[in-house]
Image (cartoon, each protein chain N blue to C red):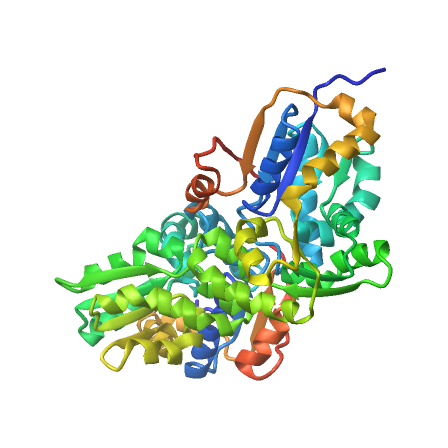
Length: 272
Length: 272
C-alpha cells in the first residue's frame, strides 16, 4: 500500500533560533509543509542536564508526531541533538513510532566539515553540547588525525533571545579568542542561534578560517536524505504551508521575528 | 489548640540566585528550619510570560506547602513576586491552603526605599518584572511625588548563572548608563541575583546613589513579620536545618555554590 502524501516535516528547537533552520529548509525545499515547535517556555536548553534535555526533547518530538502528523522531525537544536537524539532514535522511536523518522543536525555538520578537508576545527556551542563532546565525536569519526577544539559560549543564546546584540561583540571576542589562538582552519557554529552572528564572527576570525554554519547546508542534506529515502519523501504533503508553534508567548517573540525575518509571523501557542 | 512547632520556612527562586536570600535570612534568623527550592530546570523566569511564571510559581509553592511542610513560603524571585504573587495570595491560598502564608520581596523593597526618603529611584530588574511595573507600583503607593525609572537587564541573570563574570562589567555599564543619567538618588536591585554585583554597581553609580539590595533587609523584615504574626512564628520548628532542593542538576550548580559560598552544598533533586 502506498502511503498518502499527507504528512509534514517537523522542526524542533528549544527556542526561536531554529527559525533560521526552518527558513533555510523552506528556502531550499519550499514545496513541503513544515511545522515548527519552539519550547520558549523552557528555553535555553544549553545549560541543563542531559536527563532534562532528553525529557523536554522527547515531549516535543512526541507532540510533533502525534498532534502534527509529522513523518519526519528534524531536531534543529544542537544541544538536543547532542544530548537526546541517539537515545530517542534507539529507544523511543522503535517502541513508539517505528514508522517515523528523527534526524539531528550534528552529523550534517560533521559531514560539511569533512567535505572541506579541515584538519584543525574550532567548535562554538552551548555548555551542555561541549560537555557532551558529541560534535567532536562526529568529526573524529569522519576525519583522520583531526584536532577539534570545543568552546562553550553560554551567553550567546541569552544575548540573541534578549535582542541585546550591542553586548554580543565583547562576548564573541571573549569566546573566539582561544579558538583563534589554536590556528584552526575552520570554525563550526554548533548552535541554531549563531548564524545571526555569522558576519561578525567571519570578520573576527579572518579570511583564513572557514565558518561552517548549518543554515547553509541543511537544506541540501535534507534533499539528499529524501532522495535516499523515497518512502519518506512520498509520504510528505506538498502544500507549502508553514505553521509555527511556541510553548510560551514571551515578550520578545514578536520583536525578534520582525527583526530577523522582516515581518511578524502567524503563530500558535501550544503546551505538551 | 496550640499548633506544634513543626513547620518550616520555604524560600523559592527560579534558580540559584535566591541562595543569597536564603543566606541572608539564615544569617539574621538562624534558629528556624529552611527549605530552598530553585527551579533550575526552567530558569530563567525573567523573559517568560505572566501566565507561565504564574504556573511555575504555583507548582513550586504547592510543593513547598505539601511536600515540605512549610507554614510560610517566601517568593524570593522578583519576577515571580511581580507576576504571580498577588494572584496566588488572592485565589490559590484561600482555596487550597488557607492556613499557610506566602510573602514576596517587592513590598519589603519598596518599604526600604521609603525608609531612605528617596525621591528619584532607579530600578534594575528582569524584562518581565519591568514590563509588569510591579516594583514601580509598590514604590508609588508609598512615596508621594516619587520618580521611578525602571531598566530591564535581561542578560544579568544568564551572566551570573553561567559564571562568566568577566562579561558583566560591559553589560552593567550598558544597563546602568540611562539610570545614572536620570540623576537618581537610589538604585533598587530588583532581582535575587544582583547582590553578587553590588560592589561593582556601587563603584559605577558613585557615592551619591544608595544601592538598595534585598539581602540587606529581608531578614529584618521577616523578623518584623513574625513578631506581628505570633501564630505563624509559634508554628515554626527551630532546628537550624537548611535543605536545598533543585529541579535540575545543571552543570554549573556545584561550581557556583562553591564560588559564592566557599563550599559545596548538600542538595536534593526534586520534580514537581
